[in-house]
Image 1: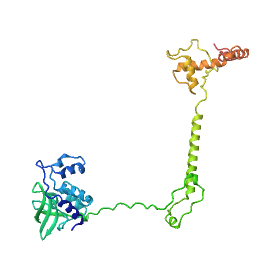
Image 2: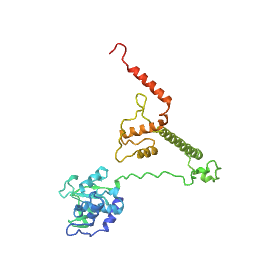
Image 3: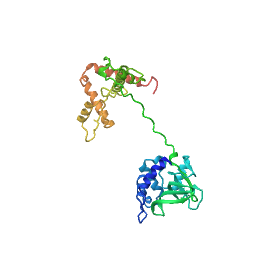
Image 4: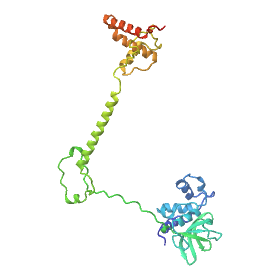
Amino acid sequence: MDPIGKKLLDVAKSQLGYTEKGDGYTKFGDWYAANIDGDHDSYFKTAPWCDMFLAWAADKAGVTEQAGQFASTVEHAEWFRKHDAWGTSPEPGALVFFDWNGSDDPDQIDHVGIVERVDGKTLHTIEANADGYKLMRKTRDMDSVVGFGYPGKIKVEAAPAAKYTPRHAAPAPTVDKVGAPAASTNTQEREHSAPDASLPAQEVVLGGILAFILCGTVALAAGRAAAAKAPTAAPIRVRKRGKHHRPATPVALPVDITPADLDAADAGTTVMPALSLAAAHEAEDREFWGRIAHLEEDSELAFWNSLHAEATDAEYAPAPGVR
């Protein structure tokens, strides 16, 4: 007997006698729609349920990977063929697929059940949706059999083994214990300690500390470089001829901006907010004239101003003989 099929048979026997409701509803189709169909289509609640019952039974028996979970008998048979678990020899526990027209074509399969017993060329089966409405035992001959699916022949890949972790390996020392004498351990603990540690625990911890210090140093240097780019004082705009000239008419500030607002902004930030080009120029000129106001009465400054004027006039005077 197929070992996986036996588990299916045990579940199937417990459901013998179940009948669908008047509208075709079955608990197996309802379960399939809720748990297997990705769209949760209500169609399955009243659909033909011979294969959906086997999907339900496989879930209850814990053998879904070997028995499959399908609503289509054609797709179920194809699944067994792809897994090299298909044949024509009857066997208890095998799933049996029928075509009522007697063909051997898997694409023409109409119905599926599970073989309970084989008596020569006679099959004793348990089938859902038998006679169109009931879960019951049936006696069949081989004339309408297309083939058999053998759940026990489905190869299931074993789950990867968990990586071995030594049970007696000592935890890594904390920073405050680096360099402290190692505590004594017995022979059994030493034998089960991790043999593939590439660095002593002390060197690993010291390496982590050095890496942390290095990262902090790089971050600090980057911060200092960024801070050095910020100007420490608002720049003063210098005219091309080397002198500042007061405008004949003071520059008008916006209605909601006063010189006091500009002073406050200049004192709070290293770069004056760009309120407008005219306002910025007025503020710069005002700061410059404020700084040199004490020089207005300086006779020496007057001398150099007159000298500069004479030099400028001479530079732009026409050459002799040129009109």
